[in-house]
Length: 456
Image (tube, rainbow, N blue to C red; front, side, top):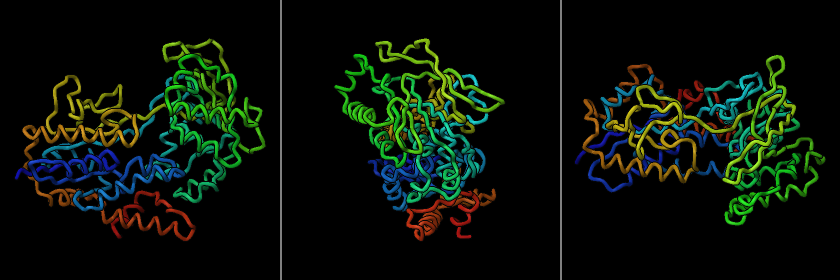
């Protein structure tokens, strides 16, 4: 029987789903899969991109854990592609590779002043509060009034974590340094800005509803934002999700905080719609305000500016306008869209539609940062289908033996972690949380993660 030695780079949901789908697929060859992950722990954005107070979403880890725990996929953690292992190494030891490295950088927001002190990317902030080992342990939470730019779930996550009282996060797996930082935050007002109207937001109803349940936080909406046009009314009438979102927002209009008057809470979370970013106001090198233009619907599903300029005094601003992929050494990359150029997961050469044999992509590095976990599964199916059908164009490795990879990494002094190591780290984190009645307490420093994983 033909043997397929497959490397997958990236052990988040996209990579794990691709491995699982391939192992379960009907095929005429034997499969051996090695999963490479630059972090010492698996699960990617589910571990490091989902807010700690979202245990329901993190429940997907249970499904991913079951796949890895079957034991038919080897995992090599703490291995950096392009440094510890290269594309030439993969060609020497595998028939093909699937890249599933995701998108972890912030998309740029090209407005004056965006680079001032006090201006941050949402992805960096999420990495900090999720205990990512490669970001600083501290975060400058010094602002009383903060702006968050974006109308998607990441914007809501950032806004909720900023506005929520730190002690209310203690039942979660929030790292100790993050809790300490948030507890010292002087924030009183968080302003969320979106270019379109309430019927065009990208929030999911669950995320939005959770905002209104925050303790000692007033939700503030503005009556002027709810003068709906025909397209908005049609969206509310025909789309169940939009209808629920409208119902939640309308219920907040009945609260004391409407139009900025505020209720009795010590913190306020303001939602501003029809607001196009114009400029970050900077004083002495630091963020001092946010200037935006009021927009209105154009009748075609978009917006146009009204010429009315407004300002809000703030001391920090977070852009949550999307994630962006990062280039990989030796792999074609589309700098404009932040993805690996591909046709249904088959990697293409950068300047043509010519296929690159043996190379595939799945997840956000394939299609951009859109869609939920369900999309990731169907995405992986498409890629795996092509991989199976492309048997004639696989690489012919010089040394496909399974022992070659541990020997190679050992020869380069790479302190890789494996599945048993992840179990050790997992149990350690759960054990840290147990005395405090918490799900777990994350270990943050990379060297400590590696030491625990390797039993050193």
